[in-house]
Image (tube, rainbow, N blue to C red):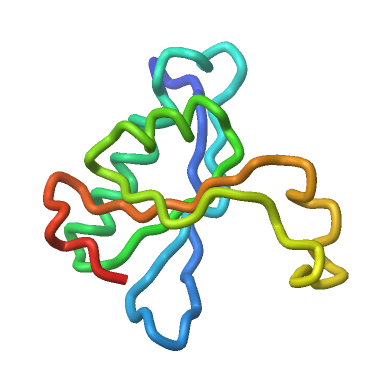
Length: 119
C-alpha cells in the first residue's frame, strides 16, 4: 500500500519437497500497472523473501518477468537454480500450455549471505 492505495500483492505457498524442509515459494507477485517499471516488484519480493529467511525458512521463486529475471541474475541476494522452459515430455496434462512458450527462471533467495545457499 502507498498512501492507502493498493499497489501490489505477493502470495506465498509452502513448497512440499522430500529433501527440503521449511521451504516456501512465491506463487504470485503482482504490481499494478500504474506502479510498474520502478523496481517495486524486486523490492517487494526481496522484502517478503527476507522475512522468510529471518525465520530460517528457504524461499524460492519462479518468474517469466524479464525485468525480474535480469535483476535476479545480477543480484547477490538470489541464486539462479534453473533457466528454461517446461519440457514437453515431463509436463502433466494440467500444466500444458502454462509456460510452454515463455522463458522461466527459478531462483533461491539467499539474502546478503551466499554461504547459506544450500538446497
